[in-house]
Image 1 (spheres, rainbow, N blue to C red):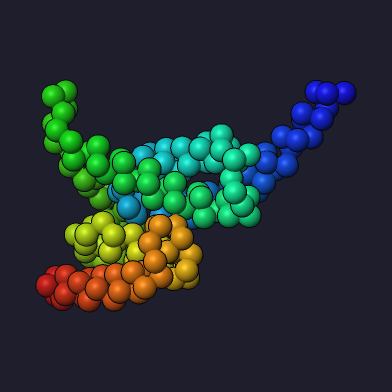
Image 2 (image 1 turned 180 degrees about the vertical axis):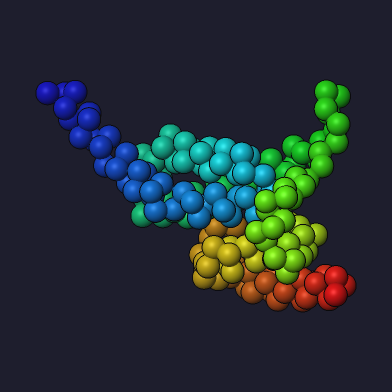
Length: 173
């Protein structure tokens, strides 16, 4: 009887997390992919975020905001991956960003590649704001919650990032 109660108590979080995974894992992976640049690391980042949510689900103040938690975790995990790549290593050479494969080159237009390359040249916060606002299609409020900054900071950072992106793309023409 007690085992059945335990299972019932755990069923709701598992179902909630499974539903979130089914609905949002692909979008979160795409977000991480644009930030990090390689698919395997992006998938790892998202898996770590869902694993963290599963571990902490019972301690969430508001389980309705689990998606906000996931977005923040993906951002933080992606930042960690990028930070580790910048650290010097005695065992490996310096990190070089992935080279577009022949298939990717054929599939992606020159404009799209130029935008992605320009995005990677922006400062981290500006890149993240643009990705969350326009790639993940989040509102200013949702972006602010995911990044842990104010809505006004999202607005001003978005404005500066769009101007910088325009300048960078203008250089390429």
